[in-house]
Image (tube, rainbow, N blue to C red; front, side, top):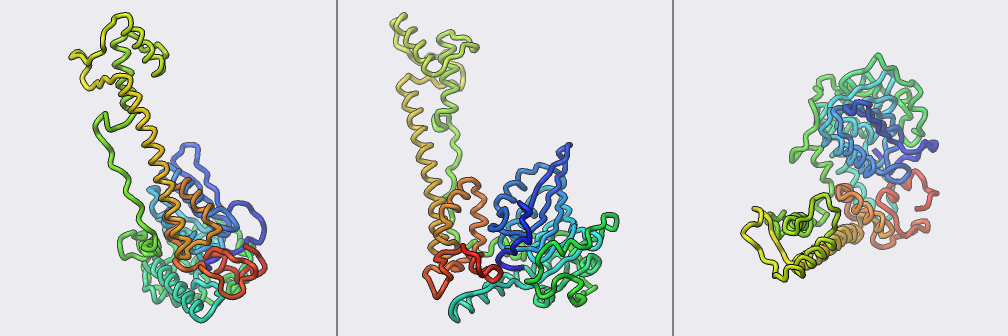
Length: 420
């Protein structure tokens, strides 16, 4: 799987879509193009829509040449966490990152005439000998983790799968089942035999199964029932590739229990009820807090009495005078403002840390701050970026580009003339 993305051969729009049936019990999820955060829809959008699916069954349909390994890992983990029963069906091609995304499904089905391909992670590096050595270590670690995922699901050892990845191994539908990468071939649903021709596969060593040697399949492999998220498993390792480089955000404050500590929302309901009871205002009367206070002032002026808390107050009712109530409302508003500012500061700190240790480029700072504000779960995706992949200082000629993402640097191999 390339660490960078593969450019689509034509503009086909977003590479995924999700459709729920009329009964609302199942959904069709399609991944039909390159997997990346640059050319198409990013993994954060995919995961957000996936999490919103409240269904029992998800039919995941795949026809993709792969793309970004980090987007692929994020999608794979999101599928593994979803409570629905997931059936992944390869409709044409599941290559590179797409080949390990489908391993998160409860069942993997190969359509007739479909293909699957696995290979070692690759990239291009510009720099000195240390830069080259660092990039080699990154690629070796990523490839080892992915090999472990294949072994965890299909059987065999990670070393065996790493050898197959280094050889760039292509499988027919039947060969994928024999190797343990899929459960069965759906002979009733015949796929398009030219599906792989819809993508530019020239960057691979073999452009499709017809141009590749027969895979060395270990028939002793036994496919296992699902991936594990337990500590030490390859899937857990993929989910936490660089989690240790992300600072831990402050814990959310514990919920308070007493009415006075809960703030103006719960207190306002109690005060409103108490005022209406004491002033004889029917529940149907549409009065806001200001109107209720005005009615109280009129009643006090007529009776010339000082309001007191009486023993007749309903159990659980707290009665406050106007000054106390207004003070509580103002304090709660200040608290909300302070909390919002605290969350914004935490998001900025996470993004600044990622810029400072070279996980993202400074030009992407605002993008990540907005992404974290829209979806706090994006912190997992940010955690998936490798520390030091973005140079903190210019080193050598960079083609006029001073800032780039990790994926831009590593995938420039495929688009040497594209800026940004």
